[in-house]
Image (cartoon, rainbow over all chains, first blue to last red; front, side, top):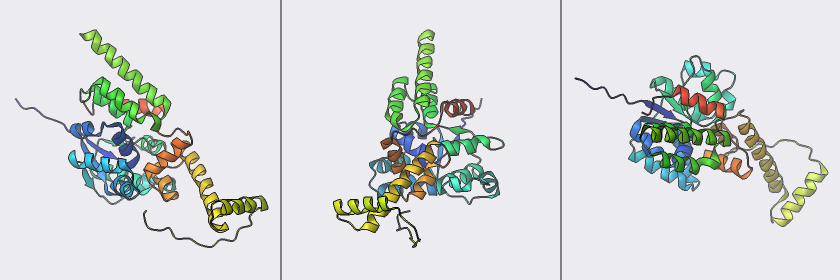
Length: 185
Length: 104
């Protein structure tokens, strides 16, 4: 009998990476998926953050290196240019690089919490699956990669940085998950 | 992003009241009037860019580029102004659906 372990590939942008890093759930995600950090995103979230004395940037660097995240670089191709047509002025180097890496690496999703970028991803044909940090934390709890209490703590850490509605929806999902698990026992 | 941004001269008529404000700012902060004016302009730019971000009209990466700062600082600016940024409930629900099973 053969077992096939599927490891999904997730590309990050600076916004999603910083928020998931702040939540404390980044190591769990690194343990569950192959994480690709576009070079421009690494520059925005880690190098530039360190230059401007953000402690978060040092913590991000440590977590990414320890979790074997891959820092990669790909040219922005025609597909990305087509997707960005008409809205290129709304996006920075990191988001453009994240799209380029997503297509070049045939990744499974993009981790982001950026409203403008989420709109672009949802409008693509076919839509690019987006993993928002709150959903990532809930999914990690669902997959048993963090406990429900750890997921609540992680959400509480990023509560000031995400929209109230998304925070409450994620908390409700954890609540339902807990009730379902209690019912099973 | 860390290197100094280039600047260029631009002719501009400035209302007297703003000049008065710049004058007062330059006195209280012991700086010159041009610096005070640039700081006031920058504060307005921060406010405007954070609103664009809130509306989803620019990304946080683009906001950082426009303000010559970091995405970390953009998050701080939004928080300081009590502006909510990030995924909406709909974005969250869509994300749950489209990435279901990804981390199990």
